[in-house]
Image (cartoon, rainbow, N blue to C red; front, side, top):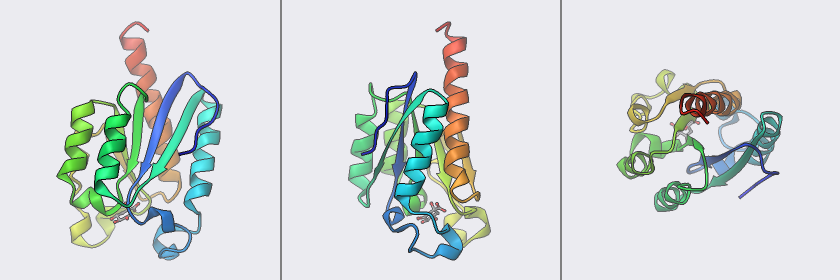
Length: 159
Ligand code: DQA
């Protein structure tokens, strides 16, 4: 878990299975950045947008479900790259639906350009939106989009 100073908004970035191997894992698909580098960039981007960014990676489906439950009352939004669980996990989808926290789905690779089994996301229909195919920038774009969305929600509710 990585956290920086308190900002106006709090967002948690969840990384699913095998993303701990970024930098080593199929760099031609996923790029050369490590997860620690990605997380540090997101903290920095968050700081510039008055947002506290925390992050967590797990290779275990139940841990990700627990992290989504724990996000209730703690975070304003979630950015998630569920890795392969994107294509298999009804449990992660149900957890996001259950907590009702605005969530953005991100992928480093363009999942629609790859094997057919990656074309279906269980999360896509219940998140605000999905960003796929921009490498590490997918996370940054996802974070920025989520912050804009959360500010619009606040403005619409008068706060
Ligand atoms: C991924 C795409 C998934 O299909 C894959 O299983 C991953 C990473 C991406 O970021 O491109 O682990 O979510």
